[in-house]
Image (tube, rainbow, N blue to C red):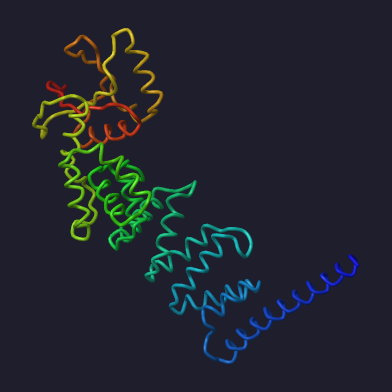
Length: 326
């Protein structure tokens, strides 16, 4: 009885396979006949059915024809096929090409997929990162919450070749959080604690007027972040900073006998980020010492360093050098 059942199952599988094969061949023949006789081109759904039934090459050829005729969805599906390796090996390069073609035709999801593919690739180039950021900026201007969140994170941290711009970064995260994007909601709470009341208000004003203010290279109101960093570092002196040279104070005040080891630990942890700066020490009013790194030509440069160091868990203050070497 068991053998009979197995045979029946085998026969049934053969029949099902034959039916699927017949359907696939019929669909392929139908598309081929339409193309050869000049009948109306197959619909996107018909072509996708070919791919689903295993007629990959016929389906992809038809998708290319539909894309060339102006169907952005056809290019998008071609990109998906090559990115996922549905027809064979994965090909991120070919996928990027088809995503780009669909994106240029206004396909929103293709733009998002292309940006992710370019930026998060293990071998991402500077040019690829710039293209991805440009795509996210266009999406963000149309209130794409994922683009708002990703860009907000990049601006906040100064990643992807962007100058650290916490006011803009927080504003983008806040806008995404207001639309219910879960990751942005969690990040907004953390970021808000690092900003002053005035900085948060400016960020939200920027987010509310995103289309008008858009994206420029210069950070938004960097002096608001400077005020926050000075407050966090315990300083209260507000100096004119148009002609000053700058340095940053890193970490907690230390006893003199611990300074060398403490400085080595900072340099080891941060890596090359401080290698271009000269190490120094400044004595505090209570006889302890702070580690300093300088000189920096502008307040923007000092604040950018401090923002990065604060994200790494170090206290950091940007201060003007009163008597810089000229």
